[in-house]
Image (cartoon, rainbow, N blue to C red):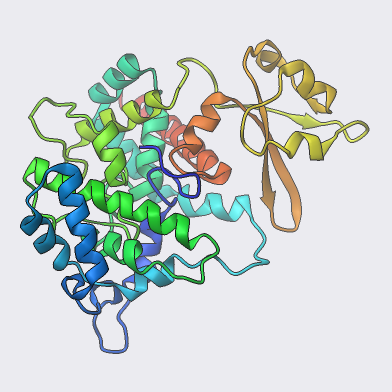
Length: 361
């Protein structure tokens, strides 16, 4: 599932955490995620879009019109897409604390214990470590505990036809969500799914791993061979699909996601090191010429590296040397903070699992 450059692939790190904020009772006592404006059946632009979808995918136009016509505008979804207020400093430690805590680690240990065989199989077949898969599912939905309660068709229709015009990238994002709505309707027809039933995040992401419709279509795997891909309830399909996603984006088996790094204050060219952002660009030799000091196994790394900066509010930033695998994790959500949370949650769960196994051999 490759999203457009403006939007993370599976979407919006921690969409589920925002779902909880968005579902509070409004002034009429009804959860905001359920309050809506008129159905899109009354919108000529939506019905024209439905006819285009039907023509592109050779679907029954009446079915597509009926399905999309029952979608309703959710004002809260449009509000949640507004950019964060400017001037809010990033803080890795605060971000980390949202996703790595005792509750999430304990849930991760249970998920790993219950799916040990499938995780091992996926690691062998796709080359993606179990802790990365476990980290993704934990960060996204706490292993299925917070998958969102928005009707996906409502969320996608709202963002396809009523994306906030004041957003600086409104046109680009509108097109992205129209493509996702197109994929969702085609998938529902192909799989004989009632398009009014699937529920997920305010951005239209679905299931334990929060796949967008295009990702489900491209990377979804029926990993237990039951002739059905279920990312909401079937952990086998979840594990296989996440592993397939990472393999598809170029995960390199055996490569660390990052290495420790120190900056030499006397010769560090920080502007040059940070210019490529999270895209691995520098050879080990060039990395060190620019003042990024590596030790141990990092010195033998054969691929390109990126200097990853994680700001800590008013405190000094944290830096790591990101590899191509770090970059692959950011294809799931375009954020170095998200990628580090995935890596560290997976590591914490793995260590807790080992301690549990040691106590209960």
